[in-house]
Length: 368
Ligand SMILES: Nc1ncnc2c1ncn2[C@@H]1O[C@H](COP(=O)(O)OP(=O)(O)OP(=O)(O)O)[C@@H](O)[C@H]1O
Image 1 (tube, rainbow, N blue to C red):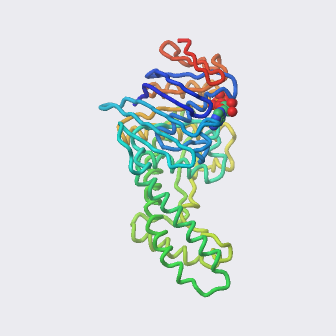
Image 2 (image 1 turned 90 degrees about the vertical axis):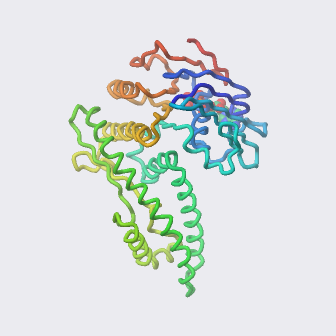
Image 3 (image 1 turned 180 degrees about the vertical axis):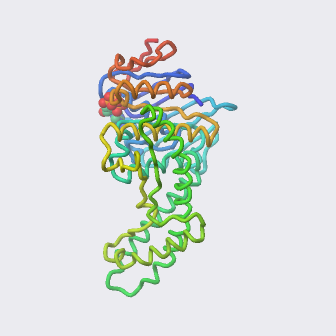
């Protein structure tokens, strides 16, 4: 799919902005703090209904204003799609898809598909497990709205269970946990099963891409490190979760928190059996992150029939010329949005068809 038009009112530092977009390549160039990432952020919002930079919608509304509006129009293989988001200070955001108001904001998912690649993503392998869980969760949420729903439910149940655990010390009321355990297991198992499927699909895709980037020198293996000992049978998995919760009960009460469950999952990333999270060079870790991100694009295509649009926020200058080269070649079918402070760094891009937007203090001017 590709995006055709973007409109912003009182969004971040944009009082009013309307842009026609290029089907293939859009480059936003400008100095720091001018408003480049704000544009990418608005596009991301139109896909997932939330920002990748803040969980506080209020921060997205222009200073000293109380409302903000985003409209993104896109073209899919067989249909148009239009997403509108209205943010009002201290109120729930309102979202329309193709002019119809959504009763639940999670219904925004599965309309516009984006994959974002930022400098933080390059650190995906190096950082802690929460970043890798986020990697799985964001993609799964976008492709499968019920996953997003389950994840939210799981987190709410977890908060309740932890609250109860904190108030249990010294009391004989363990039976009160039973109802929360049952709910936690029920939703948790659905999350585990989806993540296991996700990793199974992304493994061969990322391995293939990684081989190409490294000229067949490295063999990438991605594994799902489920915190609950994974078994394919749903009922057995539930039993396992139950058993592990029971075994951890004393520790959980002592610590006042739930120590087992998918909120403790991780991804294992190995090259020729070596754990890259701990032993990879910085270059290897970056290449693995790149392979995973590119695999994600293929996965979205496989699941939805549409290529997602790719948001490359400040990332090109962090890649060496070989990796830039590979990225550009691999992405010829994908609409790109690139933010950069220096256009001369983008030597490998075919600028013939590109739209180049110069961003200065929230003023956007197209030079071609
Ligand atoms: N709610 C808001 N209202 C008005 N201005 C805002 C708001 N939030 C952020 N800004 C302004 O937006 C600008 C930052 O924009 P953005 O993050 O898009 O920068 P950028 O051009 O991508 O810079 P860099 O190259 O450093 O990443 C800052 O000047 C900041 O003050």
